[in-house]
Length: 362
Image (cartoon, rainbow, N blue to C red):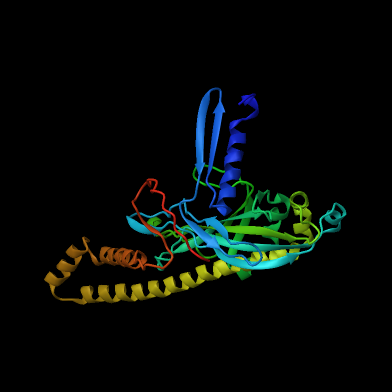
């Protein structure tokens, strides 16, 4: 590579982030990226570990990389689903602003939304979860990632109905990636806060599993008067150049669609939370009844055996020990789910699994 000074580490990171995002929705393509700077070589492979075929309404089926690289936090060994489960959401039309028309952009324009929530906890219905992060990615009609207009999406949190969503706040932050928080290139990232989840007395081991929602916006464009490849490329270039104006011109429709997709995600999380609250209420009844039986027993051998069995010295310790035991038994109850791809997870850092390809029709 000539003039290596022009190709800084930041530029290399940008190229890798772009290819990572490209492979996210083009998982059938395997890419090898090689750098040679100052005689030093480096190679990066971009290939999918787990894939899913997603059928869209007006375009060929798409192959998504649904590998969940971020493992859920846990304090014990367990079998976790390493696969995301894409959901095809709303498709809605977009009007083309006059400025874009003046430069030659005509035809019909729409957006198809696909969501991906990770990590998957479907096999553990009694584990508490919360949505802590959301990222929006935009793709051209030819499935190429384009830069999401930061100006439009920075104002999105102001337009959302938090009470309807059951959220406390949402904040748009920098999309720069870090080793502990991988971010797809050209995306906009939001941090999310939920109502009534924070409990200062909650045990660290009982904290909710942090989940991330990926919102994929696929632009779809058709014009009967553009049949040549060069014409279609010109149209896609105009789409990217005027994307900020297009989204702003359709602000209400875009905001409503994103609100609906976010609401569907939060609805599932709320239903899970309600089931957990019922389970916790039942657990408190069990604990109270058990403590009452042990405390009121006149049989000292029985009381001593109960305390010894739970490795505690008194009924106060027995209550805490029972609560922890019931939490572990109920929370880590695993129910196999069709479509999930499970792998054994150990406490601490995880080793890279052997590549395996799984197909799933949406």
